[in-house]
Structures are given as C-alpha cells and as structure tokens.
Length: 368
Ligand SMILES: *Cc1c(COP(=O)(O)O)cnc(C)c1O
Image 1 (cartoon, protein in one colour):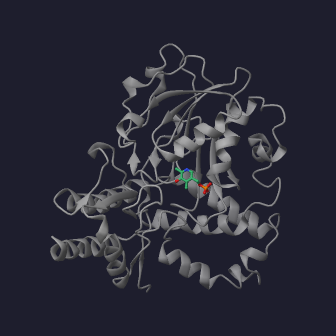
Image 2 (tube, helix red, strand yellow):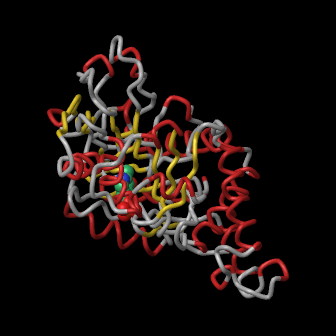
C-alpha cells in the first residue's frame, strides 16, 4: 500500500493494481522471457498487447466500427497542429470554442495553418463557465468545430455534448473535434457524435508519451495541407495500424492494463458514478466553507480538476505543507492561476478525496 494520495494534474495517479501487475510482469511478460519494453513492436507478443488494448478501449467506450483508433506520440499538443493540417481541407477555415488555456493553445496553433474563427468564448466570464450552445456562432462552411470538453487548468467541464446539427442549421455534416485529454473515459460518451477525439494518456489512462486518437474513417479521405510530414498524417497511422514506426510500446501496454482495470470497476457508467461522488464531496465542502472558494460556475465545474483558492493567500504555504504531512501531495495550483488544484481522475480512490476533505475541514477550523 502506498502512503500518499497524489492530486497531480498530469502525469497523474494510476491504479495501484495496474502498477502491481506491471511490477510482476516487468522482467518476464507472460513467460516470454522479456520485459514489454524489450519486445519488437512487430513481434507476436507485442502485437497481441496492442490488439488487446485497442479492443478493450473499443468495448469500454463502445466505439463504432467506422472509427479508427490510433496510438500516436507527441502528446495532445501535437494534435493542436495535426488536426488542422489534416482536417482543414481546401477552404482552410475552422471554428474553435475558446474556454480556457488549453483551447487557447489549440486556437493559436491552428492559426498557423488556416483561418480560425472563435465561434464561442467564455473569456468575458474569466473562463469560469462554458458558453451555451445557443450562443455558438458556427460558420456554415467551417471544416470542423474544435472544443475542449474539460479545461484542466481552469477546472471547467462541459456536462453535455454539442449537437452541431442544431447549431449549424442546414449544414449537418460538420465534424466535431474534441480534446478529451483530461476527462477521457471518466464518463460514458457517444463517439458517433464526434468526427475526431484525441487525448493524451497521462491524465486518465496511462503514462506520458502516448496520445490516443479516435477518428471517423471518412475524415481520412480529406487531403492534408501540402507539406504535412508523413508522421503528421492520420492516414499514415491508420493504414499501418499505428505501426508505421515504433509506437510507444510500454505506454500502450500500461494503458491496456488500465483498460482491464476500468472493466473490473464496472466500465464507464460505474466509474462516472464514482467520479460524481468524489467531486461532490469536495465541492460541497468548498461551497459551505468561508475559507475555500471555487470561481467556476456551479453547473460547469469539472469532475476531474477542482481548482480552489484560500480566502487568505498568505495561508497557501501552510496549507500545502500540512497537507503534505498527511500524504496529500501535488495540490499546488497551476502557476498561471495560483491557489490549489485537486485533480481527482479515475484512479484517485474515494478514500483519497475523503482524506483531503477531512484535512481541509480541520485546516479551516484552525484558521477561521
Ligand atoms: C495536458 C493537456 C494537454 C497537453 O498535453 P501534452 O501531452 O502535454 O501535450 C492538452 N489539452 C488538455 C486538455 C490537457 O489537459
């Protein structure tokens, strides 16, 4: 048993069972005499690991047959470029929803490749909410609409999936693109509503170094912008089952173990219920406290990343120090916003959140 609870925003906590199994299989995977790290990515052992990881993901998220799953590298940040390079097509226009720092980065990167239109933004609200769908100004000729379902830094999460057929009037074929890095597999989601989903693994599904892309097959027919490197073309990876070059093999293996763990937990509907319960514990405390404050609009609060401030920032250091003594670590807020942030991804047990909430209550008593 580990003695700490790790609230890092990413790389983040992994299920203890997964780490234990990886330890057991470290030197000799299933009698192969090799560590997974030492295997050829084209050998039958690793091919079976990759196949299993993919089919477990397909089963968990109920991914339809006309979507390809790609295991790529370069992090979610590379997708900020890869999406426009591959999907802008000939007219070169894309709509983006701006809800905070990560969508902001996606916007600036896309602007290097085409003409970006901010179809909706919560900037006027200090990025503390999500813009309601009826305020989205979708361009009828946009190549796609990009949004960020969970803003990891601001702690703002969409509790709904945008339906572009309503927003875009007669143009019903606009692909929805989502950066799901920080809430991927934290709740059920309907893949058929998306054209493309991407997620860096290190928040909710595995180690850093792996990014998962789920892409509807017809989008692979769009001709990438000229000059798009071979490695930056989705089709390269789709045509080669993510084995065009060496994929991040060990990260794929760990992700496979996380998929099995998720299944053992009852799948996405069950994990969602646990995530709701964990988030409620901490937000309820914040909302009934005089010391803690969360700036995010109540209906748009993230279940994964809970940012909060102390009414007296002079107490921040004492808070972090005393939390650490209780084994509660990595609670410091993002350098751009200060305060605290508790990231409570799938693998954070309820006990960890309960321990944090108990500590916060006690700390408030001494500093009221
Ligand atoms: C962490 C994060 C990223 C960046 O991921 P990298 O793998 O570091 O490139 C992008 N988008 C969101 C929403 C994130 O949480």
